[in-house]
Image (cartoon, rainbow, N blue to C red):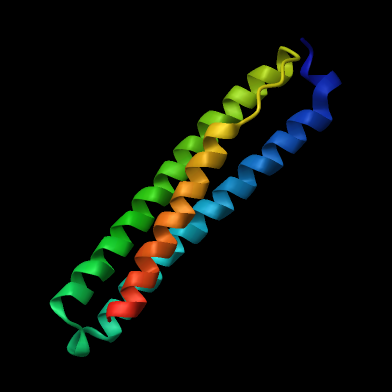
Length: 115
């Protein structure tokens, strides 16, 4: 199918992809925040607090990268579906992002509680 006829749908798909990329950047930012708090408060932090800060940093970096990978896969699947005039809801990425946010909230809450 000619992509010219579906310009609006493709542009919406690109905007959605860019929104996922911004979300991934925010997730990575949480990791940098945890690392900064860890470095600035290292003198007063318990061993558990240090381990938790490292866990939050690594988890948010990993989840940010996985969000980029998932968003890219979703973008190309949606692009193909638009060109084939099919609609398939993207429930997997919604479930994944819900789990990611819940996990990060738990980790950051534990970090703030125990440090």
